[in-house]
Image (cartoon, rainbow, N blue to C red; front, side, top):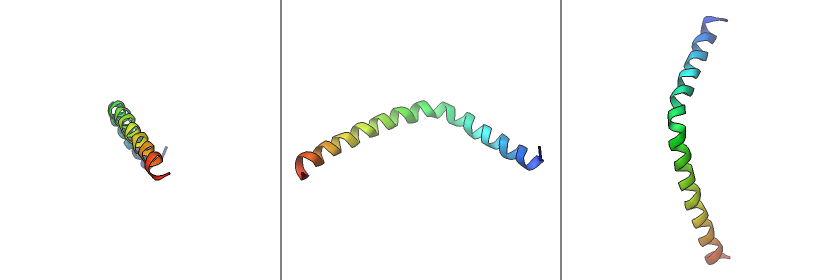
Length: 49
């Protein structure tokens, strides 16, 4: 492999490994966001349709 590709690959692996710890938190945050979005959607259906 070329040295430049090796550096890019290593950088990508570091970013991926760092994100693995935060994926659980992001997943929980997304669930909360989804619940809020559903409530907003229900409100729009009741009041605007």
